[in-house]
Amino acid sequence: MPRSFGEVSPHVRAVMQSNSSRSSGPELVVRQALWRAGFRGYRKNVRSLPGKPDIVFSRVKLCVFVHGCFWHSCPHCRRGKQVAKNRGYWIAKLQANVDRDARQRAQLEAMGFTVRVLWECEVSAGLAFFLEETQNIFANVRARSGPAAHERAG
Ligand SMILES: [Zn+2]
Image (cartoon, rainbow, N blue to C red; front, side, top):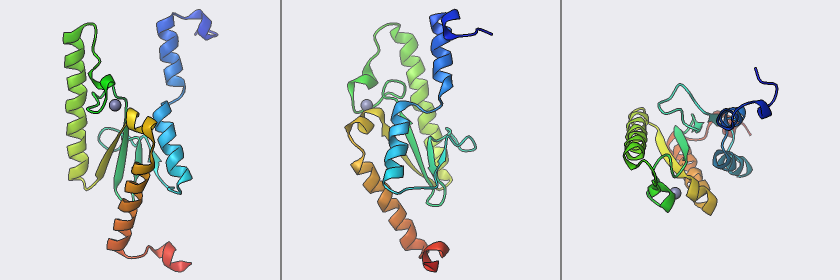
């Protein structure tokens, strides 16, 4: 067991550093924005659901994925189309990611979830639109099911 990052190869060091925190930057930004906007009670990295969604609001059945533009082939920006070296390898690999995302999304929707994919580039551009959407989802569920018990109590 190496005593410090200085004793391992740059590759191993990169892996160790990426494992040391489970939340990537954009995911953290989204969670903080939700928290600040008053959305609480979500679960993170839910392993029991297809695709292990980054954020899940069980009560309103909303799954949010925060996708890296390169790895998930973002349709909105250049990073999603950036494959320079080893074209064949990358195209196959990235296509497999896209196929898996689509399959997992279909599974979640079949289970009754609303699935929202937030791209890294959308996150950088600002989350006001996403927060408004989330607000609407909560409002719709509330309208359909009537006031929840804890909301009636007060
Ligand atoms: Zn993008």
